Amino acid sequence: MTTATTTRTRTAVTMRRRVRGFTVVMLRARYGWGMLELRLFAISINGVRDIFGADAELAARLRGVAAGSFAPPRPERSLLDRIGPLFSRPRTTEVDPRNPLPRDVDAVLSGGHIPEDRLAQCWRLLLVWLEDLAARDLTITIDGLDAVEFDLARAGLPSDYSLRQLAERELGTALRPLSGQVVGYSKHLHVVETWRQLRRVRQEERPEFARTMAAVDPLLELLGAIAARPDDILDLVVIQIPA
Image (cartoon, rainbow, N blue to C red):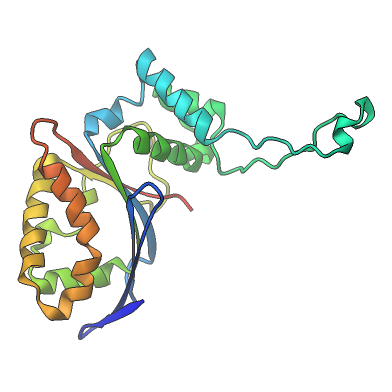
């Protein structure tokens, strides 16, 4: 772990790689917004909205993804279980209550009402589906967004292209955000301009912001990948992972 010091805060940055090659970035700071675990997806906003009230082909695909991702655990069978009828009942298994149920799948795919007590499970379901549908995705954990934004602003990033602005627009779906949850998206053109501005600041290589800028490199890479596909227009969807 390395440490960068500014005049107002001390920011520690840690980076690691996920199995599928997506980057997980950890930014830690002493103040602002608390811990955020964010998923960022390169996907058109219309592609997200199509999930709610999905046609038969898309619904079948997404049901298969949900079944593979949230299948109940298989019961373990001991040697005694195989001896005879007296011991043939499988051992009970514990089902994670945070995982969605078939009725959650039906509610989201139909675009119908989602009860308040099933919102977290449906957000987990949507995250799995977006991972399957998106061209690329990125996971970022931030502890103290204000500190990161402060460094980027001092480095010359205009406020119109701050990290917060990437989640400024509402998704416009039947799935309501949880209380305090960060959820939103950026249109393609805003993503492109944010990439240009962030790249400009990154290329200036001011040493006092080196560690913060290095930590946002995966985000810069994702924004650049979106910007490079004008014929297949992608937006950027940002969703805070439910606790």
